[in-house]
Image (cartoon, rainbow, N blue to C red; front, side, top):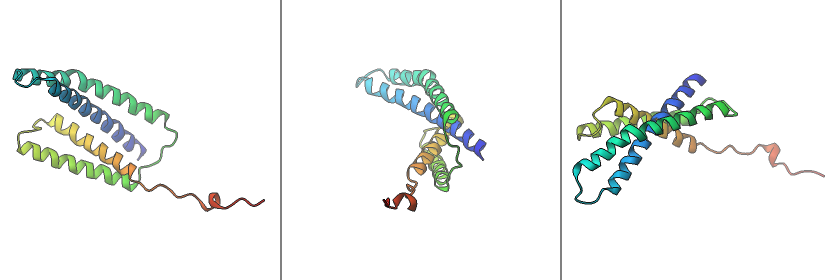
Length: 146
């Protein structure tokens, strides 16, 4: 089970880094373009983002996730909350891709795969963040007797 979790974590974080790297530079280029500018300049910025910043985001997140797995002190199995978040993120990603495909959006399988695995990773992160905080044990709550 741990091997599956580690593979899902590395692939999901790498795809999340790719999507964030590409969308970040595409957003930056769209902010920089002046109103009434040439239409090819926005497409060129997104093209550069796809060629340069998406692989840089992939590489940085891949190194970070492997380093995190390597130096993590505990290797616990994921709780049902994390798995629920992963599945809900997967379903939300497929729903968004299906919506965008019907309206002329993500029509390439590579972007679909990257986006769906990125949303499932975000769902797992949200599932982990919403887990209840364990309560202190009774031993820790006992007052000290002198």
